[in-house]
Length: 278
Image (cartoon, rainbow, N blue to C red; front, side, top):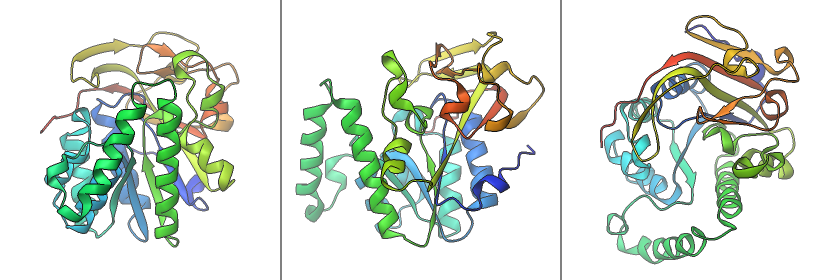
């Protein structure tokens, strides 16, 4: 895998590195590749995982397997475990910013439980309402801002779904119209971040409920088919035509052109399901 992001990362405090599908192996092996090359010192790895749970794991120096309890089931896989293990070995904090409570209440010590119960009640209040996605984005952005304040000298590799890293997620239509964490951060701290979406042309993947599916994107007007080749490739914003779009979860076409949503795209030609371990 020969992909260089060097010139795009040198002056950015936050690097958002997305994925179009949670249940894909290659997206996380590429994230580990980027972490090893660019985030070895004075860095924080940030996951789409239970914020309080990951803080608890960090404070207790839990191992990679124990930290998997903070992730949704589709992300409890060998590839994410490898990222966690690498970060632990190299003394790089691995934290989360999601407000969905994944970690069980009784895992927390007594002094944490009242606060945790409040988090659970707040989540239950919003999860079925019309404001859920806006509330969640706001909470994730707030949690990310807290990490910026907690680690002012560090750079952050933030690994979220593509939906959460778009430059103009609030300009999409239909189900894809979601204000992104990237947008909220840039409102407060302009120019601090960069967003790279990850996409795949074909392969096998898992839905969030762990059900299996195969896909093969043939649409000629999407980034997945813009430059055909083998392996993986990086396409920077300036090289992307204005009429090229991308797919969300391999089946739903985004409504805003790629060059408006991402600073660059990593395209994987063929992918497979991750190795679920818990």
